[in-house]
Length: 199
Image 1: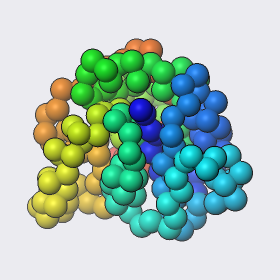
Image 2: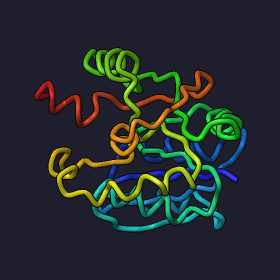
Image 3: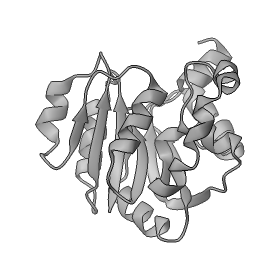
Image 4: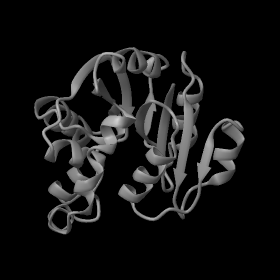
């Protein structure tokens, strides 16, 4: 009933991220989408035959879109390989998606003890509550309604090559329910915050 679409292109946390999804109290079907720098030996050693592995996809939005559309489950969790998920993350997400169309992890903690990472979590994750892609959950039917905007050339030019599902949600002002029981540990600062601070 629920799948986790995990995106990677060479994250040092790949193994731990995969293991955190496999060891859930409710085990999701994993749709793994890797890039040219992905260590596929790690992926194959952890995933089962019930999961899907899609190889050498270029571009984060392209990878996310392919993974979501390849999922056959009603509920989908958008995940990244630089994030580790609490053992009850999927269970709490599945329960919440029975009530809400879009949900977001309510508690974010840094994987590393970096000041820049803590600042990003305080301001971007908590204060502004941006719907970062790696902590979103949604019904597949709801996502399909947003796909058309990804073809907008003007939108792509404004956002750039990091266009992802979180921007689709933001631009469409989709109501997203924050679920405090969904906890994940994130490698921060992210690409966006590093670019802002020029670090």
